[in-house]
Amino acid sequence: SIKAFIFDLDGVITDTAKFHFIAWQKLAHRLGFDIDHAFNETLKGVGRMDSLNLILKHGGLTLSDAEKEVHAAQKNDEYVELIADMSTADLLPGARAALESIRAAGLRTGLASASKNASTILARLGVTDLFDTIVDARDVINGKPDPEIFLKGAQQLGLSPSECIGVEDAVAGIQAIKSAGMFAIGIGEPSVLTQADKVIAGLQFFDLDEFIQLAQP
Ligand code: G6P
Ligand code: MG
Image 1 (cartoon, rainbow, N blue to C red):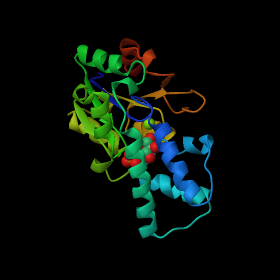
Image 2 (cartoon, helix red, strand yellow):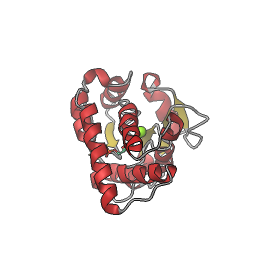
Image 3 (tube, rainbow, N blue to C red):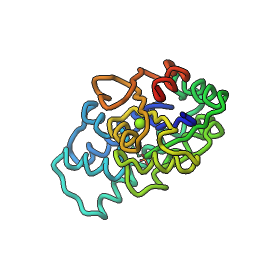
Image 4 (cartoon, rainbow, N blue to C red):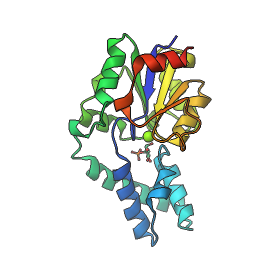
């Protein structure tokens, strides 16, 4: 039976995609090209260095590993500055209520984020204590769509994947949840998140009983 929900952070609990986009676009401009919102979609859920590699490919550029480290660090410095003013007001609608309803029902919560800034952001949002376990980019070798981060979340909760439901806004994230053998709830558009078992527009539509029933028919 279902005993836990494991959430992605960016795009599910809070909207940091806009900050990542600003910082990546500055980097692209420094390198002499532009990235648009459509391309930015392909970066969701993708780790920092993997994102940089996609961006360089998009701009037709090749850089040395040392140069890449410099640009990735500069992007992160800018990103960290952009998220410095985040507060509880930056929680997406329904996020806190969803986490509280899960815990009130005696189920557990986990976070599986590809971001190395995850714990900082959770603290700013004031929701660190609502998670029973946290796995971020520092704890895994393989990024999404590899299932490692969700499998590690389940393991840290002492549960099997079939006892967990994953919640994600990125195509790569839904792939990771499905490869982990979990029921996948997508946050966004059904036409984009085609591999998800159920798609809702946002956590304001989170319905604990419905999702548990769907996941264990
Ligand atoms: C999340 C975001 C990605 C971001 C990644 C790494 O998955 O959706 O856009 O690139 O985290 O974030 P970081 O804060 O470590 O650069
Ligand atoms: Mg996300």
